Image (cartoon, rainbow, N blue to C red):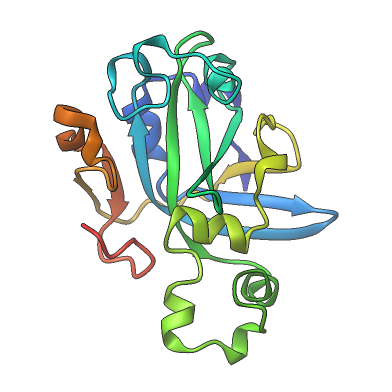
Length: 204
């Protein structure tokens, strides 16, 4: 698999979001490869998007990374307990990002299961298997992605995304999830997911 380069991320955020589907997110933790195929994403268009952390050019210690070069990770915490992994897109100074919402687990399933449920994969129930990586906080837990992964260069070797050349799927779109505060922006159809994939969040 070929690692995505800077040019991939340095494009329109909506295009990047859709083209991330089917790619593979990889976390290399001391030689232990944890990975999953990206099956659901949400795009956030920065300054003009009321749902984005950088709306109206907001710059804080947390959001400063959004103004950096494309292809950098943005990991933030919600509800004081769940990490969310995002990819910075477009050129430096344009604070746009794509949230990775769900993965289809691929490698080291035992480690993913231990990270998520504290038990090996073959002891998981059908419900737990389906819920292993089908949400932004869940996938971060399974792949051991936390705030220490914030601001990592996704063009290097610790945390990155690869192209596995699999694109025989249909893409669907919907409104984004959990942003009812965002006025008209809550209705933008900027959530993209692989049709009929069981790991896509059940909220449509």
